[in-house]
Amino acid sequence: MSAVSTRTARSALAALAAGVLFLTGCSSGGGGDEQSETEAKKQGKDISYSFADEAASKGPAPEVEGAREGGTIKMLQRDTFSHLDPAQIYVSDEISLSTLIHRRLTNYKRNKDGSYSVVGDLATDSGKKSDGGKTWTYKLKDGIRFEDGSEITSKDIRHTIERTFAPFITEGPTFLQEWMTGKGGTEARKSLPDGPYKGDHLPDSMLETPDDKTIVFHFKQPQAEVPYALAMSGYGVVSAKKDTKEKYDKKPLCSGPYKIASFKSGKSMKLVRNTEWDPKTDAQRHQYPDAFDVQFGVSFEDSTKRLISDSGENRTATSFTNSVDASSMQKVRSNPEVEKRSVSGYQSYVGYMAINTDRITDKRVRQAIAYALPADSLVGAFGGTGAAEMAGNYISPTLVGHKPTDPFGKIKNPQGDVKKAKKLLKASGKSGMKLTFAYQNAPEWQQFSVAATQNLKKAGFDVQKKDIIADTYYDQIGKIKNGFDIYHHSWGADWPSASTVVPNLFDGRQVQDGAANYAHLKNEKFQQEMDRIRKITDPDKAAAEWMKLADRILKAEVPAVPLQYYKTIQLHGSKIGGAYFDESLHDLMPTSLYVKK
Image (cartoon, rainbow, N blue to C red; front, side, top):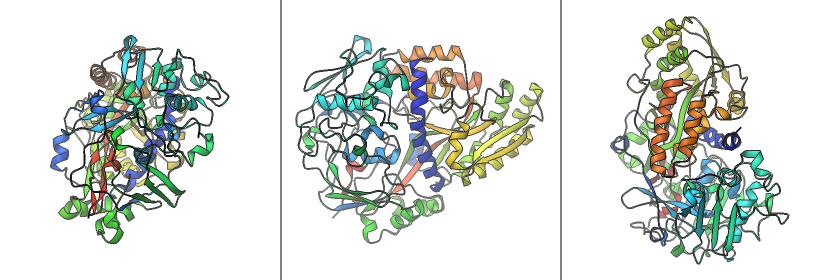
């Protein structure tokens, strides 16, 4: 089993947490019936990210037009934050919070023309590679400090990376750990089983800190996307001197423009200015409000009503991740005064219908399922095009290299092609075969299951529906011997590259309980192609190859049916300025917000 395979099995569970969180949010959120002109223009647009040099990584960030300092912003959140330790952060609301309180070696920056760059955050640039991409070197900026005034040095970066090997770190990303050790998941941890807490360190052949300003990563194989990985919240800097291990998860030392004044889990959080943050060192963040006042336990419906009302303190309110609920979507879209206080865009998640290739071995049967499923009914179930969009392929429009292909006509025939499905099933000699269809017992999936079952029955299947409670859904479909033929799931990329999608979903070396290869696909030819693409040192060229491979897998094997690209719409009060939907965060960007006069 390769190093990559065990890594994905480990991080799949963590990434699933993000997927489950988002899907739960979408189940309460929704969309309208028509796309906005802006969203329509985005379709088919090539997504590109550049790796920035030192000049582009210098602060301060360009001023937001009309911005001013002062005031408090109210953040209405449904879910409390389970983790504040950067190494444990891997879900969307905590990732959004981390933009305000934690810094890492690299970060994303939106440029004036709307494009995005990976810039140096704590580092002077996005990184310098050598040895064919096996070695990446970073230099730290001057004037970077934790909230207690202590200088951030290479010792803190080394400690940040090495503590991710410790057994109490269970939720965050594992990319760097596995690239350095050449091992995956559990095996990678054995390289430093107690982290740095007993005085042990990774050897210089993996991680080197020749001086207080320099960090050198050495990987077993060439890695083209290191700047992306280091921009993850999960690699936010942790103080070597002030690390309290498990306790750090509730009271971390902050390095961003804000620090935590108070946190009552499930109730509230107060963020105030971090006076040790120097805007001259930061190319992306701002520090306009005096404070952020976070209130937990506010449902999507309630936050939508409050923000639509725009009354009292709601005028200076918004949310990290709460989206507009389905029942209010038409009210938002039909009221220009409310709609202009909204931001919208694609989430990174794609919804799929996995086909269990262990149980359905005939490709023609899988093709019949693909043609029969009515993708438009799912989009409608989620509330319309404000919340989702029909997917033609496996790759999200948020990823570099995405192309608007549609191998199974899911966009061309949004209600499915039952005639073609019936013909394929008949040709396979399996008309009338039993098909066990598992789905979450959430309202959206229950609604979709009705339309999907109708089409599948018309195509000649004997459909047996199995609704599963949401709390155990992913546990059940994640078992190799799950007893189901088809079942839906979602996956979101860790960064804007399909390198964190295609191998996770379709690498045959990942077929094990809890892994993301829900279809149990095993194809050595495609596995070899994945290994080849991983060695491409130009990320744009690699992105194009991932897109080609994804479509080849879809057409040749049909292990899953692409159903929908997820989207979101968020509101803010009329006294909030600087609000925009960030295409790298996939949510409203908190770091540019200010309170209007």
